[in-house]
Image (cartoon, rainbow, N blue to C red; front, side, top):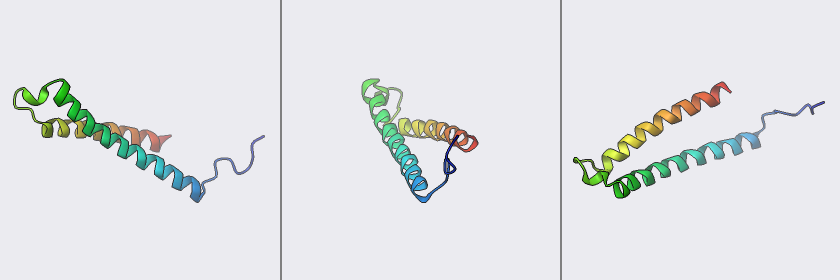
Length: 78
């Protein structure tokens, strides 16, 4: 019913998946930087209670790391 080579791991598939996952990492990192700037600019968090862009970026990095770990665990179990 299915071809014998379905699901076969080849160098090309590994290369493409590496590029896709690497691109997603870069996109999420850039999105985090943009989100920190937007939080500070639009929500005026950078001018409140001594919160700086650095603090916002650290918070976003921690959240991104946690979400990334959960996503990676999901990929590894799938």
